[in-house]
Image (tube, rainbow, N blue to C red):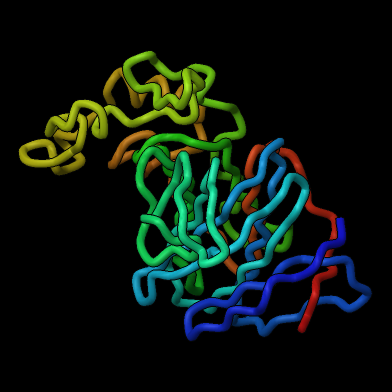
Length: 259
């Protein structure tokens, strides 16, 4: 689907371009990773991104079927998530039903829970996962391209946990379930939040809630120390981050706007 690109945003740690139909392949140095973010949902989403060095990112909407490209150098580590039900004015001020990072279109801090989050640490070996520790607001899948070396399996959850969310964890708007909160967010106890005497892998164990999350989303983080089955490694590849897409969906287009 062709559409006009947003202005290029260039920063030391990351830059963003919007995908358009083009006959010129988009090329990058071998030291960069390309993240193709795709919206397969039936509604618009507002992607957001943060990193430890310079918390910033997003600033545009993706309509159903649209994509965007995020490019980051080796050494970058951060989060990508989707915001839903947003309404912003011409100055970029507003709010979202889920995933808000305050009142700004262009995020300057992490999003508010409940939010499905893709987490990355890039290097000679990349580490990545999709976390439901802060709750769930959208189906989200991270898939490495086929040229990666290592485990390189697909992370995330392509099912809609909102439809199977326990009543006590449901976040609603006008009676509609818009997200599924974490037990930590709802009950705020040390055992659910893995803090205090429960702040280590030996004492922070799966709860009935995290077990149900894991059963529904086996390739996603379900609680703070769910490392063994949730952190995935890969090297020498780019990534597709899809919202509401299948774990078995592949992106075939390799042509992007190159500014």
